[in-house]
Length: 107
Image (cartoon, rainbow, N blue to C red; front, side, top):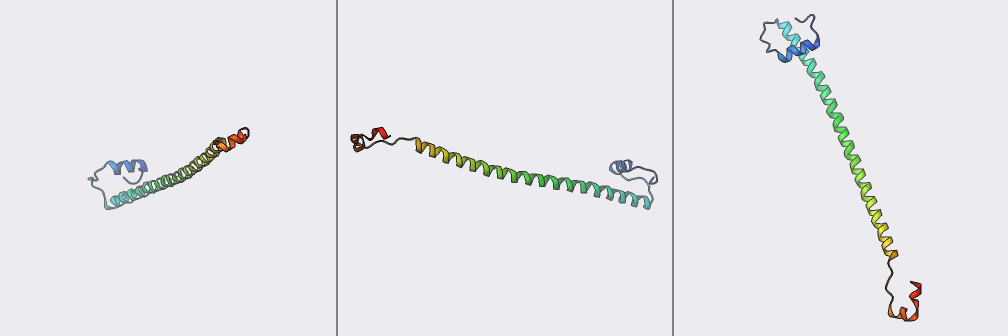
């Protein structure tokens, strides 16, 4: 059984079999070792992919935080510019004294 079987066939046998067949102890040992090897490979891939995903999520969170800061700074700059425009564009009311003295033309 263990001589000329491919890894895919062996993995399928391990996943679908109840292992009720009469095998020699050396064949059971071989099956267990192969199963451990497959498990290590799959577990390693899983750990690698989850690590990559966690890194990319953290990286995106940092990018989002920096963009939020940029948006906040832009909003404050916009508010400052709007305040300057509003304060420069407003004409103040003249007092009675200024009106009598003819300072209306200045404003």
